[in-house]
Length: 258
Image 1 (spheres, helix red, strand yellow):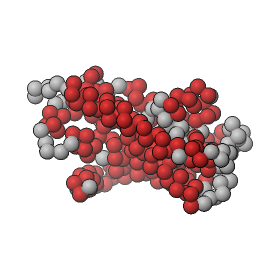
Image 2: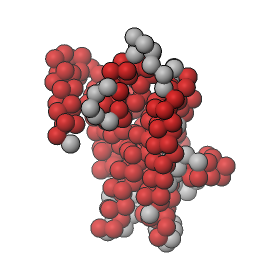
Image 3: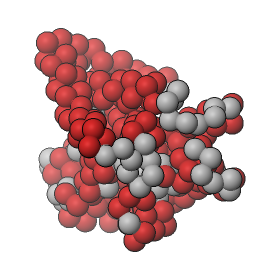
């Protein structure tokens, strides 16, 4: 942890060397996400609900996805640019250092400027909490925190899966963005609105619905099944195939010789 905090400090000081660029980057990131909020706002100016979900309930689900993605983007972005390390031979140096390769890749790029997107998610969450119709208790507050934390881990796993594919393709594959940046966009609504087929896929294959849709039902009183409240923890099974794919990539890796 001490070494990780040291890397975090280095990235923060590096970003603050160009304060205007850092601030403009934060503003740009905020505005990109703000357009998604505007699309929700204008939709609810015309319709009062979407699949039975009110404006505040949709904002609650969106804020969970946005905060989870933003935290993962802040702290797991090194995996998102991992293909560059493979291509320029930098990963060879990582392998000879006395630290875990995954840890060094994780620390290679920390996007602190993404906190502006996280701030937007927090603002939406603060707005939605008293208006979404949830009867808040300590247990429900704990589940909400669990949704965000488990979502962060899941997005981090998706970034890692994308990085692992670079061992075999040498280039990053854009399709993984469907489940990272794409999930941030279509996660603006509860995943059930996209149909049963999509909901099943996002429950049993890429368990995004496990930290967003199913626990949301429990929070809102639409389900009394305690399993729905624990679904964020169930989404953590995705760590196992992610770890397996990463280890397989390490074994198959061949040095660039540079």
